[in-house]
View 1 (cartoon, rainbow, N blue to C red):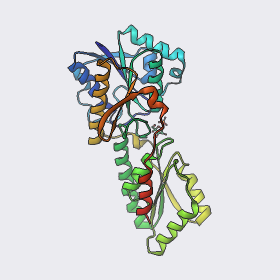
View 2 (spheres, helix red, strand yellow):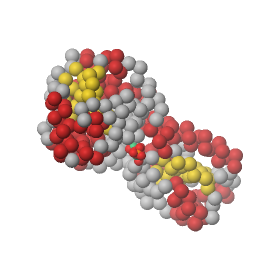
View 3 (cartoon, protein in one colour):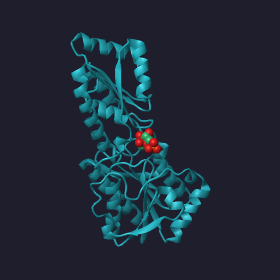
Length: 319
Ligand code: F6P
C-alpha cells in the first residue's frame, strides 16, 4: 500500500489530533503517502482531499478538536453515498482509509469494508461506548473536564448547602457519568444501563442530612433523562429545591490529557501498520493495556458493556 487516507467523523473528541499525527508520521516513516480527508464522510463524498506532509501535523499534539474537521453525514448512510466515497478515494489513488470516530463513523467504515474497500477504525469519542476497546480516545480528557466542573460545583454546593444535579454527555452510555461521578465523589450517579429508585435516592439524601451533610452532588447521564427533568422528579418526591448544571459541549473540548495523547498515538500508528500489512476491515483498540484489533463487522456486532463493579463500588462509597 503506497497511499492511504485519514478522516475524522462524528462528534469530535480531544485526542483526535494526536491520532491524526500518529497516522501521518507512522505512514511517512514507512514511505507511505497520506491524504487528509477534510470534513468527515461529507468531505469524502465531495472530494475535499489534500496530501499531508510531516509538517502538516506539527504543533497539533496538544490541541483539542480535529484539524481535519468533522461532520455527521446522513448521505453516507446510503449505498449511493458510500460508492461516491469509494470513487473519490480511487480517483486520488488512495488504497486504504483510517477512520477516526465513534459508533456512526465505524458504521461508515464497516459499509466501505463490505463494499470491498480496506478501512481501519480508530475509536475516537468521549462516550467510551465502542466495543473492542477498554478506552476510547477523548474519554479521559472529558472525564477530567467533568471532574473539574464537579469540584467547582462542590465548592458552591457546600457554601450554600445545596443539592446539585449535573447532567453529563455520553449518548446512550453511562461511562462518563459513572467514572466522573466516582472520581468526583458524587452521592448519586444515574446511568442508562441501570434503573434508578427514587425512594432509595430520597432515603440517601435524608440520611446524609441527618448526619449533618446538607449538600449533595447527583450526576445524571444524558441517556437517562435531562438534569431538569430529574430535578422535577426529585422535587415531586422530596420537595427538595436543587440547582441544575448541564455541562454540554465543554466536555468535547480542551487539550487532550497525557493518557489520551498516548492512546491516540498507539492506536493511530497501529491502524497504519494494519493497512500496510494488507489487513483492512479491522477496528483497533486497547484491552488490558495491550493493542488489539478485531474484524470491524464483528466488533460492531458486539455491545459495549459498562463496568458494573464500578457502579456498585460508587454506591458503597456514597452511603
Ligand atoms: O458522541 C459524542 C456526543 O458528544 C454525545 O455525548 C452527545 O450525545 C452528542 O455527541 C452530541 O452531538 P452534537 O454535537 O451533534 O449535538
